[in-house]
Image (tube, rainbow over all chains, first blue to last red; front, side, top):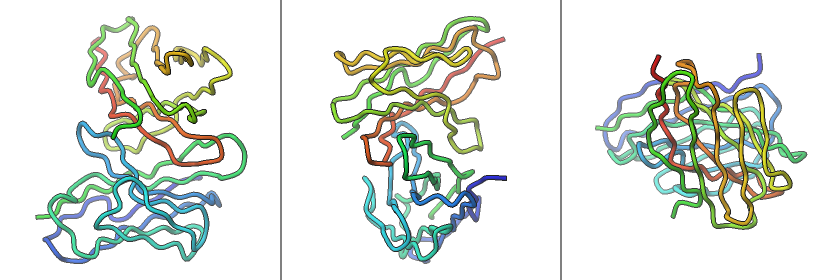
Length: 114
Length: 112
């Protein structure tokens, strides 16, 4: 089954404790992206990657890091989480070729930072 | 700055009625306009999309209307059903780019 998986689905942590949210896709997609979803603000892009070893900032990159060492994986790293990073996070992937940019989203990770 | 503005924030419709969600954009370089549907506890999923070379696209009960001169597009859900209750996001992107700019979302509730 074609899918994007994220782990963990739920995470409660404390300020300053480094954490990683994993994302993996099995569709051989070149493009992967991380979003955060907050009430009234919709989905805002954090980082994206056009292919292995190619990453770039989205609209809200502060406080986050990413890496793309393998095509299927795109982990999101919070080196020193703060309460304002409490949010619902989504990973997405899509093909780069062609005119269709349908993005496939993972199930989400709900992060709470206390 | 929100690149795509979406309204209303929430919408309540009777079963069988028409649900209408509106979006507006400023960047004329946008040339792909998808709508995503999100159920509680799930990630968004592509519902329907349109390009500016057509003014309307219909898939079943879902229709996108596109007004290029006004830089607006809307989603119409005909014969709305309780199963359509979800959050809907409009989005836009530019040719050759995969990055999507999302609206703020509309929570639709269809009352039986």
